[in-house]
Image (cartoon, rainbow, N blue to C red; front, side, top):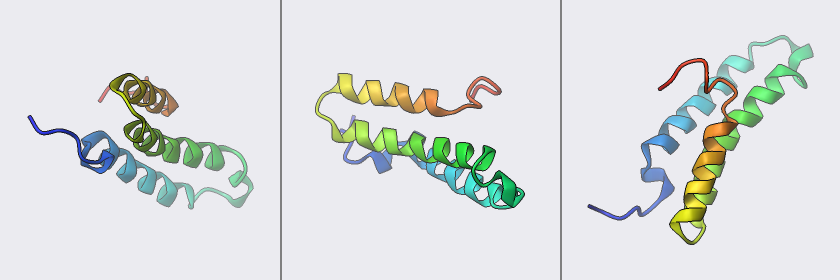
Length: 84
């Protein structure tokens, strides 16, 4: 088993980045009056997921890494809509 060299190696980070890009693209089509409403909430949550994964990997120790993975998991407001 190989040790983790970078958070970029994690499938979860790769998928969360793809999701963030998709959310940014789709949310840009929302009405301008939603810029500070649902659009802002969606994009902040989407970016927070890969950011927490990256920050957790930069911490020292498995416990801290697992903590940040849990934070990333709970950032997704849609997490209970469909189990991946």
